[in-house]
Length: 392
Image (tube, rainbow, N blue to C red):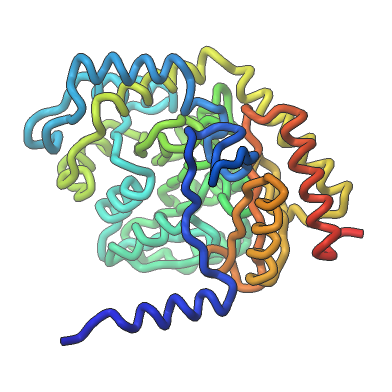
């Protein structure tokens, strides 16, 4: 009988290439400092941009919802009906995003599977930035639509793809709002202008922009003042929002069509009441606490400027995502391991997550990090950077 013995060889090859790594196991909740192996370590890899995972209002909302509704939602929403807490969350999300409606999924990944797998049909074409997130790529793979890739943030390349795809029924232009590996922002105004010129649909995935860009963290559409000109806004509830889940925001017709057709929505039990209530409270906290976003951006800008002055290559970062570009995969993983020895957790990210030869240690600054925390991280980087010959 055929077995899985080949997996051992594949894993050995990952080890040989310096790419083998299992997830860290933490002994404390998400925060600026966390416990691992009995050690207190500075966490510089979390997407918990605003520190909401431990916010007292969110915890209280989750506890109260559990006491009222129980620990589970019961079934798929289209079968047993939807709880009013889910409806309240979607109404609040739509108001927050400036759209007619919003539909919540179990994760950002399943949102992209649901949206692209449902909307893109044979005879359509989807035009995607070459550095879009894996969930966008996989969502597109589920469809029979034609595909075009344009060079990263290259508007000439996008326009060429739009020109060459005039024979398709519908053209969809898809971009991340903030690119997760480099921390740069999509040129959404130019994308929207080209899409309007060529009569294309625009979809932006704001996974790393939700809670980070725009007023109160409303996202890249708000950041650029493009309300009413972006057809679909996709986001996650798992990063700056601090909980878990994803959503698609747009027209009421979009929501109702996805309810009837999107397989991840139709065949998955909905979020637990505690999760929905915590997400709902997080959206309210975002609007009540603009100082969180202000602190986030001020800390990130200061830290980035310091690292660049020290001689580190931070690529094209313009958000709290700060890559330290190393290059070689094995060297990247050794550098990450050395930082952990020095008390800083920042994972190495290598191929296939990023291009071969573009390995980097990715730092994420959050509103939780104090000036002293960032000084500690910088000291560790300076020591490791000199040891590895990255800086003088």
